[in-house]
Length: 404
Ligand code: C5P
Image: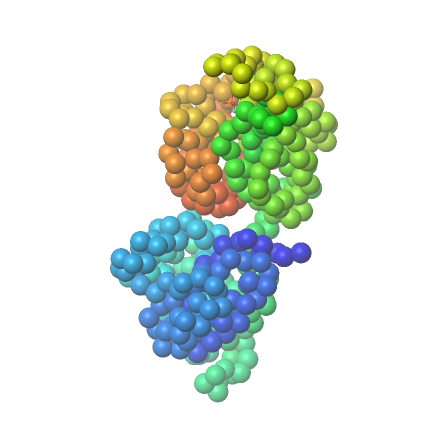
């Protein structure tokens, strides 16, 4: 199993002799399935060339903050949102000092300030520099800010000293990166997610559907599995691969999705309705392809079952979360749905904005419960999914405690 498959790892390389190990690190991260982009500081380029790291990562290396050409490609804010994790290896004493001071005077420090993703540092420096009280004070500040520290190891150093300050080996760093994605918040919890569009047949070759790509639902399925949940994904037709450790049930129509959801009742503690279910289906599906004999035609439609409402009404009701994709009056409609569909939580998402709507790689949402609301700013769907699963887990666990 590839522990980092499709994870976006932004590798920051700073100036130190261990920068040569970053080349090996990229290979290990890619072996584990990660998509790697590299940012180098000016000092790092004194030790290893961007060309080497570009060839190994398969992506252009980012080196400067104020470069119009780079900004026209993947700008720094986009890069900060793209990352599922920022790993800085090697992290020099100087870089850690700048990070601890909140500096944004080069591309890498700016990305660290801008990103909503977790940041991990793999320090590498002379043992005296590591032991220096100034470095230790900076390390404490960074750890207090929830920045992860991978290492350093102790041993023989490039300068001939022996002591702490060696960068961890590439495979160890890749393993630790993978562990960042496993929170165990939902260990053993049974969770069902609907995702993607449904297709409502008009005749054997035509159907009514919508633009849902399934990306958000699949990202949630993966984030839930990472949090330890046993995940069943009831999916309409999409082009996406099934995430690792997730059981997928493929359906086509809303009726089939409804049946699969009802079959999950009794064995499901959390239900997330992320699918864009067609509201209506043709009352009859023609047995043969309809011919264009007339200038106009009418298709009579009938309402589809509301799956999430049926789940929320079920005798063995799980903790139920819906989505509200709207093009106007977002929060007003979302609040209405929360109440009308008897949900525990609703995730409101403005699909009129093409950068965060159907098919987009980013999303930005407001999460509403009967007790309050919380906004999550625009970021990649994978990161957003991780944050949503964390929120859902917190609410689910506190509701369970209240029920005890
Ligand atoms: O009513 P509306 O379609 O806007 O509600 C959106 C929410 O309801 C989503 O969570 C969607 O998955 C769910 N839904 C459903 N079955 C339907 C229609 C919507 O589960 N037939």
